[in-house]
Amino acid sequence: MDSTRRMTANTETTNVPYLDFHDGKRIPQLGFGVFQVPLEETKETVLHALRTGYRSIDTAAAYGNEAGVAAAVEASGLGRNEVFITTKLWNDAHGHDAARRAFERSLRELRTDYVDLYLIHWPAPSKNRYVETWEALTEFHAQGRARSIGVSNFLPEHLERIVEVTGVVPVLNQIELHPLLQQAELREFHREHEILTEAWSPLGKGTVLDDARISEIAAAHGRTPAQVVLRWHVQLGNVVIPKSATPERIEENFRVFDFELSDEEMRRLGELDAGERTGPDPASFD
Image 1 (tube, rainbow, N blue to C red):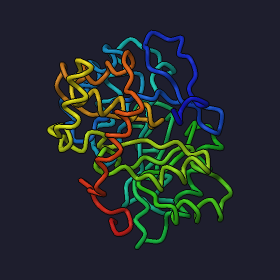
Image 2 (tube, rainbow, N blue to C red; image 1 turned 90 degrees about the vertical axis):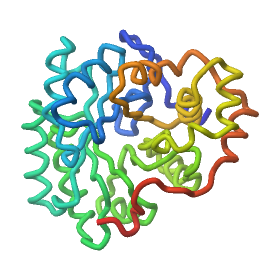
Image 3 (cartoon, one colour; image 1 turned 180 degrees about the horizontal axis):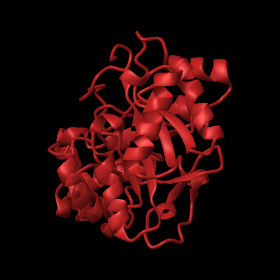
C-alpha cells in the first residue's frame, strides 16, 4: 500500500488508522463529510457518526452547517482534542483580509479557538488571489489557530505556484476522486511532495455502486459495493470522507478496516477509470 509509511497505530476508542502530515500532525484516514447536510439535521447526523466511531468531521463555510458540527461535538461528550475538525474557506473570501474575516467567522460558528485543518476550498484561478489567500493561511498556522493547513481542488500548477511564492507545502489536497476519476497523475504529484490525498465524493455520488465489477468483488467478500470502494481508497492511501444522512449507511461506511482487497481486485478497480467528474472543473470554477 502507498500508505504504509504514513500509517500509525491508533490507540483510541476507534479502529480507524491515522495518516501523518509532513508538519508532524496526523489525521484519521476515514472521516465523515457533511456536504449538503441541512443545518437543522447536522447535529443529530454528526452525533450518530461520532457515536459510531468517526473522529474526523469535514465541513466548510459554504455548507452552512459549521454550527451544527459544533453542537454535535459538544453533545457527544468527547473532548475537543478527540475530534479532528476540518473546515474550508469559500471563493468569496479570497484575499488576505477577507480570508482572515472568514476564518474568524468559522471559528465562531464552530465554537472553538482552533481548527485541526483549514483548507482553501477552490483555487478560483480567474480571481488570481489564491496565493495571497495561502499566505493568510500560513499566518493562521503560525498563530496555532489552524493546526494544519491545506487546499482543496488544486491542480499541480496551483500547488507549484503557492509553494514557489511562500515555501510552504500544503499537508493535504482534497480532490474529487472515485473509481471513475482516479487522478493518478495528481496523486503521484502529491506523493512526490509529501501531500496527502483526500477524496471527496469518494463513491462518485453513488454512480459507481451499480457497476457489475464492483458488485462482483463485493459479493466475494460479503460486503456492499460502497464498502469495497471505500476499502479501495484506504488501500490506495487516500484519506476518505464519505457522507450519508442515513444511520445504517453511516455505520456501514465505517466498517472497512476488517477486510482487504487482493492485488488482482485492486487492479480490476483501477481499470474503471474513465476521467468522469461529478463536480466542477478546478481549472475554471470560481
